[in-house]
Every structure is written in structure tokens, then in C-alpha cells.
Length: 97
Image (tube, rainbow, N blue to C red; front, side, top):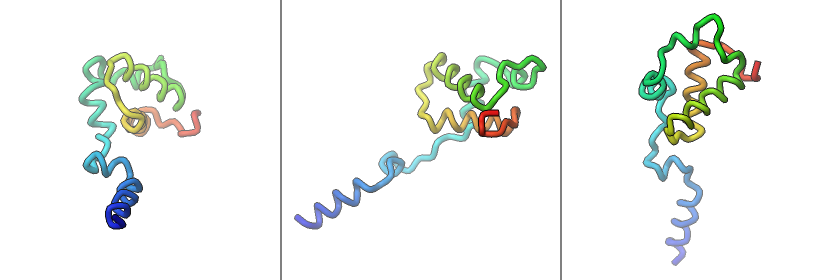
């Protein structure tokens, strides 16, 4: 019985990703290409009167789009897209500026 108990304890300590087959979160670029570009092109990120003017607004906008498109993303996927958009287009400091 002790070996079975040891296995149960060890399994409980595994990170959640190990239970999911160790799959990584898709990259923000891949998620953006697969989902975001169905509704709009990248020109909305570089237009002069852009609607997103801070890191916090960028995160909120990605969350709103994800919910509106009913994508069912996890927080890691939202974060990956936010990071991709910020690194590629916006260049906000993560402090919310």
C-alpha cells in the first residue's frame, strides 16, 4: 500500500501541464494569426487614432475580443496574445503605462 500512496502523492505534486500531456500554450503570434485576423488586419494597431493607449487597455481589449468571438481561451493564451501585440506593435511598459 505504501508504494501506491507514494505514487498518489507524487502525482498530486505534478504541475497541471504535465496532466495535459505537457503541451505548451500556443504562441501569441499563432493565436493572433488563427483568430484575430478573421475580424481585422494589423492596420488597427498602427492607425494614428488607435483605441488602445496603455498596456491595461490592451489586455482589456484582447479579453473583450476573446469573449466576443467565444474562443474559450485560458488566461495564458490571452497573455500570449497581449505579449505578442505589445512586443510587435504597441511597446507599452507592462506597468500599465
